[in-house]
Image (spheres, rainbow, N blue to C red):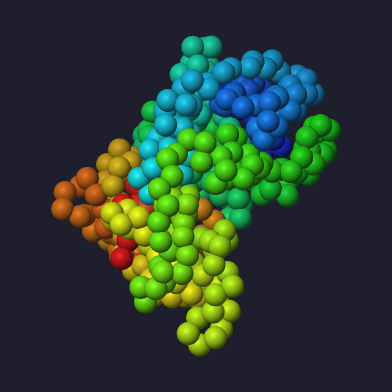
Length: 364
């Protein structure tokens, strides 16, 4: 039987972290809950539910019988995550702040805080697993394929994984919900949060316009026709279908096929759009990723792997090559991938093992 350890759990107010804390307490560990507040600029608008989430987290701690501490990481978040988020959007890319938040806040600032509290390890409600093999810590997919969150965790390193537990990674979501109801947790039926706290349920473009400069320009079809005007390239992402303001236009054949964002030309401030989900401009057989991070600390060998270019997609068969030096990697896909987006993460897998990945720089 494993010895009793002091483990600090990140309690978000959601059901997954609540059940994670309960599982660790049931195993006999000394469990302490931490609620992380990461955003406070405009809490009063009601878009960010941190106050409500803290009430839920505190109620969970009370039922489980553990202490809970409220810790404010808003300054760290603004410096390490939000500033980078804005820089990427201003450059015309589409960042993934959840990936950065995990690397910089949940498994860095939070882990450092937990260690100062005398914890041996931390735990969260992520659907992923950690396995130690020959002294090396591997990041594995969660057993529930519909909830696996290893994509968002791919930048974690050996030091972080060695002190991290994902108790619900072995479970399916339905089992987590069942356990929560059985235990009598007050948030057993609480719906899963969507998006990131500082955006919440608010209109995304309206939020970005508060922080980013706008430079309008032409919207052009693939034949070069100008068919509209955009409000600024930062406010659009590849594959976007809604909010283009050109929905009523017909293609040459008279069909009302939807328009999709296919390219962004920052030099001419041009937004290029195409009609049809499978237009060639939306498909890429190759990408180059940089800003690389490998879970083991060492880059993988050239060869065949699976890769995700966005969350919730099936692993796509690809071959890995080094692009010039080992500062960038090229992935060549057996089947063209849809709307591969610079700024998003390309994450590499060897079956159930998440190897790491990088930030998509270009796609073709």
